Length: 143
Image (cartoon, rainbow, N blue to C red):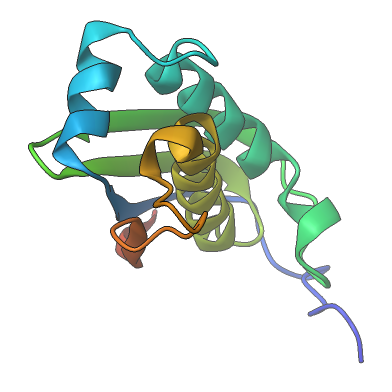
């Protein structure tokens, strides 16, 4: 087992975008919109968590390279039953940032779940309506 050897590769501008969403109860989404979540500002906290996750990807995912990330943006769109998160990660380096973008989106969505879980649980403490879904890379650029 080994990291991929990128020693001979040239630094290149690279960008990746990943997207995912979390399905929540309508009542929970309304609470988020009204700022009525006991843990605090869900959207700001989730964005910060996603940015931090992109930067810490090599600590979380084995054999990934520590990449000098030059920018990470997290966009969140709140719908009626879902919240969509989009992460855009940029670098000028020898390898791409798709895994960093995926890690950012996943962490953003998990943070949302954590902040609203008390409103999502049923009487048995389960999450029958809460689903993180369709996390995927939507764009990859190499110039």
